[in-house]
Image (cartoon, rainbow, N blue to C red):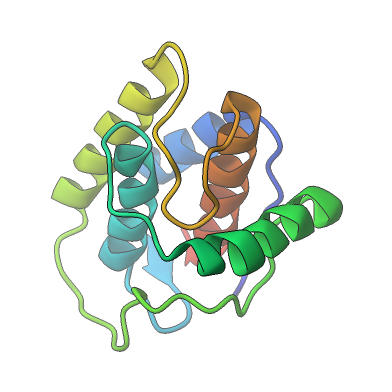
Length: 147
């Protein structure tokens, strides 16, 4: 069952992560497995700290800007956003190493001082915008996990 989580703070994210960490059995609904969700959530956190090749300027200027403005307006990430990098089929694997990597990336992201790197889809974001995007993104995908 999809849980429709809405987070606006890192404390809410941390609380949910602690629940997942303590859970005996985590299942996912939808196309992606628990491991795939964790891997998908890790990448933007890591990419905020390293340079990544940006998408073409027209994509950033139109679609990236539109997506960012919609997130700001709605206050959460909606289901059904297009993502060409999304897994096309479910692949099950041990989530433990993915969970460790996710937590490490989350800690590095949160401990980072200063600006984050250029967002390949939305362009240069402020620290607050980066936090908002990542918090909403994490809430969105953790909504597909049950424990």
